[in-house]
Length: 281
Length: 281
Image (cartoon, rainbow over all chains, first blue to last red; front, side, top):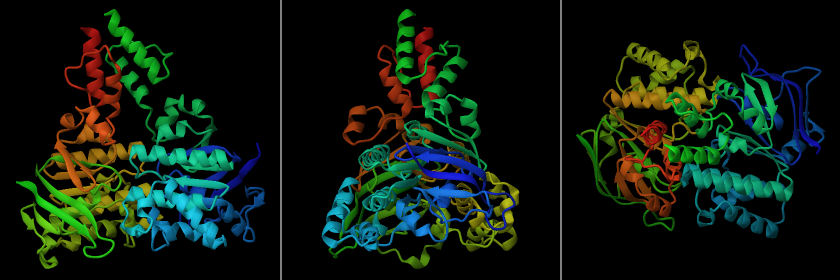
């Protein structure tokens, strides 16, 4: 697989800040993959996403390179890059422009000069996909937080970007709503070879990624498959994430004098072990 | 004293083509100085109900009693200042409402607005800056130079600093990392224990199980259930019918088929105790 995003030696210092928010980081993201960026609040996650499409400009350094889909990011190419990258921000109010849900979803398509006939069709499909058809002519400002997030995602998926960045984009959805939206993005990923970058604190969501980038105070402290990242309990704690439920349960059970073998790794194994334990007694 | 809703209805844009029922004949009484959670799906009317607590929205018909004040459709905006000091709302993404030049001024704005002197307001602001877990050195920074999670804390400190009797929070932890979230929830719990009412809008059933004394369940603008977490979560088939989740610990307990729990565990600690009892008997 080819790399669709590649960062070499990228730093970013906000004006008047004492320390860089992002400190000399390098990484690659493969085309068509799902990458989760994790780390505590203020670790630089959102800053990275804004560097990818040139919303923020990195500190000047001759070694610094940001490449997106083979295009080196510069003043001349920033619009080409932005055409390829769709960002869904955490607070959807920051990205509404249309007077109705349908207008809002149409905005990106109009901008790209999609013919009207085609556009109407894409708008309907995109709104239906996120389960918001009932609200097609509603004013976005009258929607609830979770509904707004659905519309924001529809607007980005409608323009079929090559890369979609979800910046805590489902944080206001209920668990079922979140599952359905993520599975929609997964479908689009498979169908269009979409590259997904998701910024999340939801460990269950990160666990399903192909690749995880772990950030701490502006530095990448690990990158790898979920299995290799999540077995490091100290790392998870350091970055402010919570261990998955069954790990917390096993720790507490052991503290209460119930012996749980170290080989148990999944909920199913733990359930089976506990049921057997209760039989023997 | 208690908070009372009597036959409360709310209609959005009445008489226009966009007319929509937001609240449908809501009746309940809750005791003050408790931790209340408000649950329901995206669009179920949670935020609409919340905005009635301090008359940002006034009922189309019916009557509300809260913090010793009665709100009816005829209530005039003129006399609401006292109500707003006693009952305050923290919306989703409260950081969007920051505006002052420095963090400390932003937190002090609320107390000043409600009659504290400049000096008292500054002192309260300093105290709450610390209480929400922010380092003293951010006091003189611009709130816009902080990370998203820090901005959220500033916004919440600004509301808690004038110490309302009733604090209503709409998904205050959305997008925060788990450690930050746990600190925030502890802060609200302490606040309630000091003798205030906390009303929390949430999707997270683990939080409901962990913190709530009383739970209100909304669906399509109707109050479909009101009870303790034990009562709400004692009926899995009812919850399923309404697409509501069980707490993680309860789901796990329900799969331990050969265990006998005297009371259904709702939290991790209750689950650990329940398992211990079973295997040690």
